[in-house]
Length: 158
Image (cartoon, rainbow, N blue to C red; front, side, top):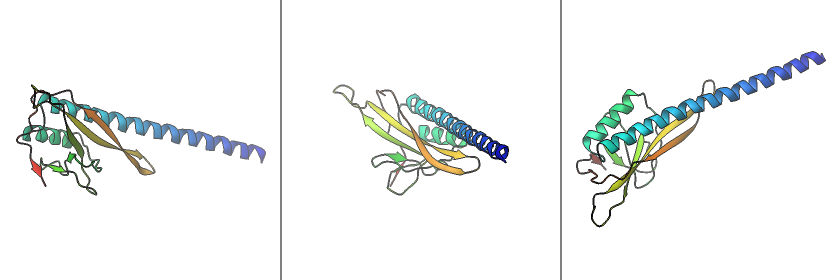
């Protein structure tokens, strides 16, 4: 009887450590994928020097092709994409979910009036195979200073 109880404790400890390892592995994989996507989106914004119809279209197509499906809410003052097929960024409102959020950080000086940085936030989920969705995290990145930021033809919607 004593050996049975001792063996049961050992099996329970092994199962607990396996669950911890699987949870850590799942979190690491989701984290890595989210930061790769965030870095690629920041690179697209830097390449096209801001948000235009073309850059929003490229970002949305990239997110669609990479299988990105996580949504979360944006902060006030940010813009977000609610539909990756429409290529429209909307001003963030409370209670709405967005695929990614963007805000413009003006860094204009006396001689360079169109200079700006952009903050991009991407979301990722912490899922476990048996338990399911536990929590949604965010990955945030900021572009380098863009001297002539282009936002003139950005497709805003109210």
